[in-house]
Length: 300
Ligand code: SIN
Ligand code: FE
Image (tube, rainbow, N blue to C red):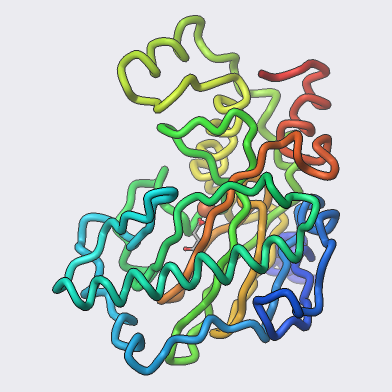
């Protein structure tokens, strides 16, 4: 063995491929809650989100207004943010993104019938900006492995289920890294994470820094997010795998559980769904369940 093989990070194998060619009810796969709850990435290499010839022109960063890195729809209102263009084009662009909302919702409800009636639509986003040109601080740098957790948006244990699709027209993959299982990740940093300062949750909410109270669960998730991104040694040497999602591939993941990083690519659709942790098939497999087991107590 030479030095290079010694420093190669241990491999991770969490991507499962499925043969579906349709978003709608007749698609092949259903009832795979256990797979996604286990922290695996469900990949559908034959499930493209097809743009009409007239929609192809939207595959250009000029439609993003420059302030946000994404063009997004907010639900339930369906209001579009982050786009720039004339009125007729913006109507067509919005219609394209709404179609993605509907496709990904149909897919999620077929894959996960147990969540029916409990999946709540979050934002839908279209990302025409090259991953490489997103200017960011280390905390916002999504080329570093992380679990999703947001400083201003405490989740209180609610799960983040995301449906991504690469719509790149030039054959360019969405290049990801995926990392170690959530439990191993929590064990890595949990002992060093201090409890939140008394009164800090109240203060953060009172001053509007958080939209609602940051619970101890949110504190822990944000600490995991930040500590992983700040840890160069972890980024380099922790167990991980490179995954290229080719154009025409759709993938589904609990992004608050699966360590991920976006290394490259351009033009992607993304739909977020929220799921109350108690509506999972196995709530104990969730990040909150794992953290509670490791801590030996309940988290609120
Ligand atoms: C992320 O969720 O961290 C980024 C995903 C992507 O843009 O591919
Ligand atoms: Fe992320």
